[in-house]
Image (cartoon, rainbow, N blue to C red; front, top):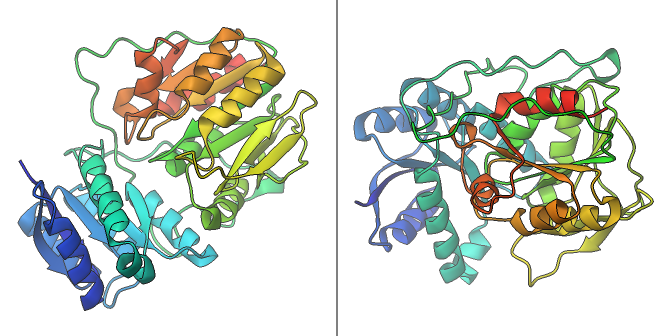
Length: 374
């Protein structure tokens, strides 16, 4: 059965091009279009699409407000289009917090210059998020974000300060065949916590990291698949929300307790045995920049059995081979459970390869990190 898509954009040109690209795929059906957020809500209710593509800046009602209403009234996976700027990053992160599943750069030049590449990427994204856990009938409020310490009082959440926060979608209930969650972890003097994630990761990382105290005893590295223009803005937001400090990693940074370093988009992050971060150019031969496997692999080489690694929601299998190296060195590997993932790809790859020492729901991971690290 074809994936039904609603295309929302105030630009007639962009609406037509996106519709043409999607309609060329026989497994995708464009069931309608809308020119603003209000129309998008009405069309979503009437047409019940499987996926909605959404622009941000539109008349009458912007995309983020529309996403919030759609998530409350007719939960549907939303793919946002965004500009590759610092402001575009801020807006995209707001949209993800409102309930959007994923995003693509909105670049008119790429559409005209690389139509085949754009078509492939857009259709892949639509198919992937149509299967995400964003599409279900029940919602609940997100776990409350702990109040940060006075040195990190948040200026805002992922949602804009002036907008009321809509409930973040609850996850689909776990299928009956899913095994019971793992028991609470044993304490160990870890020298590093390494977390890798992709689709759904920005909100997942927020929910995990806001549970950590300012005196969290282990350094943290974060590998989130994200464009170069986005990671600095994302690190700044996490830093405002969390008790721990968060910054975009720079070459020569030193690991220290209570600090999370986010791998910069478009590059690779490695760690040496002295706790020094090395930032390398992105290798065009690698699909992911940053790549979880690269960082996990360097951690395995540098810290042996003293790494606690976590693989969160995301499509694909990045992190599996790095986790294999960590396991071979005696380190610990956790995976997020299927029911709490937006996309159960990366954690599934860990579980299917028998690399997971424990499987936890998203809301358990932060608590268990505190329990595990001495």
